[in-house]
Length: 97
Image (cartoon, rainbow, N blue to C red):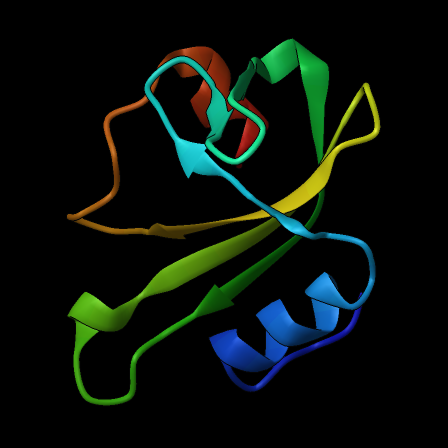
């Protein structure tokens, strides 16, 4: 797994490696708005995870997930972590560890 200095560097590189869709985190699943689908925890794998910490503020902390679904859809999920992390189901929490 490659190490990245910035979130934007990681996104650009992973998009160039077929992770072309954007996922949104919902309490029970991932949503891909452009495809109008939801992908549940049992239907996707986290291929890579990269953490980024803001230099000037802890509010800038984020995690980038490179995700592939069982039906071949590959995309990225960017999420805050720490006190601002989303409330998600236990199944989603286990999958995104």
